[in-house]
Length: 167
Length: 349
Image (cartoon, rainbow over all chains, first blue to last red):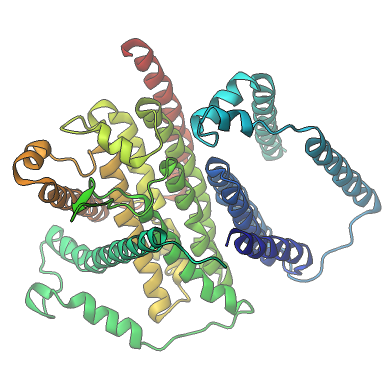
């Protein structure tokens, strides 16, 4: 039963992922991406990570994709034709994808699963309490760094939009 | 494939029946909200309201439904016919999703078997609710864009910006509430408020912020700039006709029902009523539970009335006023509220 659901979900994820890239109309690819995000939340649920799946929906489908759709609609990209990107930006995109792939590979190779220790002590490892403790105990410093990064990005965005107004 | 054991089948059947009951109750409330809205409007404006179909116009919603179903469907000349059809369906589905986590009462015990009147008792129910509310906007935005109409697009963009802005303040106000209750489960939050210990008395500021934001999330006046008739014809559902338009209208009433339920559960004690334990001891648990369901429905009806009361009392905001209220007033207020609740918890616990 679970395997069948997994295969259906995986088909949806991969299919919509490819369609996101292939769709000519930017709004269509945004809609495909929303479906893709929902199916990824489904994968999280299958892995018994309720918190992660719901937060994924709140952050990605609820906020980021809405803003993306919003800008796409405002910019009013003319439907089909898109000017070819410069070579430099293409190379930059390729390099950044490769770097991300290395990070993900490193995560898969180096990560050790700690679920067993929680299972041995019979603690509900996917509950919000446990996640909160782990985040603010063991991973305090990276967590704070991530928040500083986010707030810097936010202030930067505000600053850029303010400057444009004056000019 | 292995055969499902007996327990699982009975569990699935129980939940299916419960889902159908909750769906029917929600739709009934949505149906009669349309009549109630016009009656309340009539009462506030000192006139009768609809009173031709049946006694007191009680059959008016059925007549409206029959009319909407039998009307001609208009399809605008748009290249996105699929998205145009998906829009209203999305709006309807997402607004119905939320009622899955509402706890209606304690356990019913019938013939020695316990039945929990809640479709899903997940321990992150509050986050689930926020997730559902944040996706509610897709129906409007996608339908509006696919209409291929300037006014619709403006309405959709307004709705999107408004939802994203007010979600921030809403989420922050919920953080203050969760800091006090210490749980995301709606059932536990309800049980903590047994008797008269309503959260509204402990956190009036949170209630205030949440109430305003829930008006904005439901797209109700004074926040219904998405369908501002005086500027945008009919906003995001200008191009929709017959039952597609009916779906948009209905989804608004369904989400009103749901957010009324949420307000009563989070701040006004949910299904608790004074003397619940006395009733359970003297008259039996099932009668106490039935009264509990009726109590929750009563509270929900009051808040639906409250929504209508505000709609026919306060005029619509201007768009810049709306944004200023969201970002420059509610957002700092919600942050201050978190600080306040934190300090109070440190002092009193």
